[in-house]
Length: 200
Image (cartoon, rainbow, N blue to C red; front, side, top):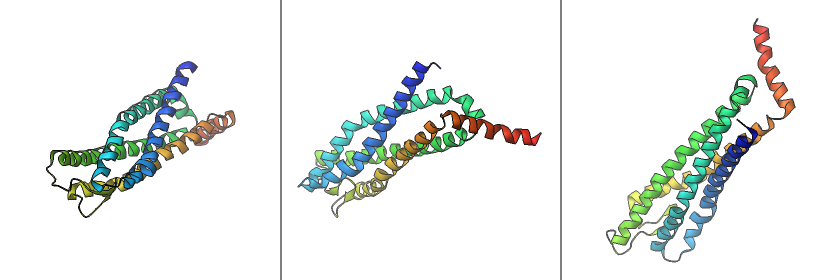
């Protein structure tokens, strides 16, 4: 892979991860909590659902860019995976965190859709005159329907789990960037070769 292609792949990888991490962190700390400031409890879910509905396509694009860039970088560095000690371990940790973050994000989307469906029922008048009252995006009230309340309780955990996992990927990326240093490459190659020599 050319250096120019590597630059594009790295840019997709990093910008996509920044979108994924930053969006999830803002959602947890900003949007979800700020929904409690809406005075009418039956309007809080509507406001936060509208916000997440607008963000979802952007988040999906960010995740797709991250995965595409990451796949290209993995292919470009397959030689280092075999020859440099520590690169394989870091790659394995990164893949595990990525799979975990993907799973948490996908499940969060399923739960978010449940909240949107409950809100749609409010619009159709099938939930009664009180609509869909919530404390905030992830906190039910005594009047929140059971299915929506259960979804909120799970979302309360996932809203922080996703930035923790994607933040973990950022930390591993920082370590992997250090592994490009010539001294790290030399140490890793020697560390991989010495056990082979000793076994002969």
